Image (cartoon, rainbow, N blue to C red; front, side, top):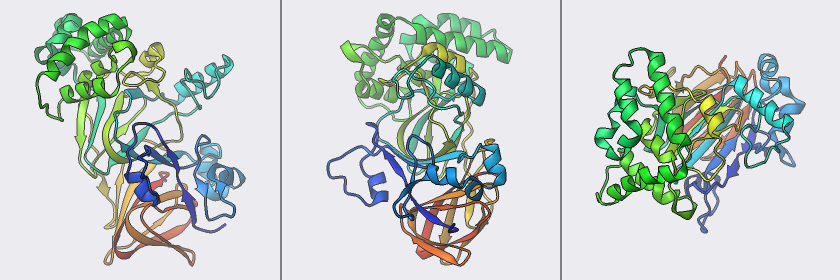
Length: 414
């Protein structure tokens, strides 16, 4: 097997996708303005990448199935049951995504088995678990990037009625009791009770609370984008429900931390953490799964009991990942995940990169400039948008073709 081979990512044309970033990476015309939301780089059976250096092109998961130990290495092949453990994505978020949470490994295995036993089709719209894997994830912003990330401190949420008086009718008991909650488990329990209340409200009551809020916001004129009010109003505009109803996911915009990431900053989303991407472009990496439980801001299936069972009700400030420079050419974004590690390689005329795929295979995507990747006397030139896979146990180098090249690297921690 060659020490390097080219891949072609698989595009997902979800309605919230942008029109320019991913077509630009692929070198395709998008004069019709079709949404290009995600490009998947990996071997998920729903949308595997294609090995285009083979003739004819071959799905990447099929190639791994024939050569698991060669591509993954003995240890990773055994640990991850012959499957590529990560999925790398490029996202272009033009419209707001749903409030969502991902299960842990045990919850995914139990949920997948339960729905299989109940005869729920894998592609059913009311399916929660589409595979048996968990989905921790991390991402790095390519542009200014807005998102929701985890519950705010209970003390911050308790002060919301001061700034958002329309919420007082739902929060008076929470605000009163939170002042006396001194232990972490008490605060978590209060947060769970509040969130369950808004998620289980009859739709008519949701409308009664949120419509006056939205009417007040519409009368304010210009609203700062770094405030929940901006995103609440935008959610109502972009994601209206049928018959004039209001999506209860707007409550979450106020209960969760609103972040604005700068290019090069990122976050980690472990199991149980509620989050939503609101706007911007990023490179994202996750365990090889497509399991999502939604909590609103979506026309898709919302299973409130299962959502409440999976969510972790702990408030706090999110950690912003800045990346750690481990060589002059590479910065990595550390997370607790054993399935993946995301790095950024920057090469120039003065700086080159060399690395060994010691934990498993590396997937590389060139996001800027162009590079030459070399291994075992074999080399490939790769321009912007090009994708390579380096199997396990290969020492390889990356050099700039001209002034510079920026490469995002997905790998398995050694």
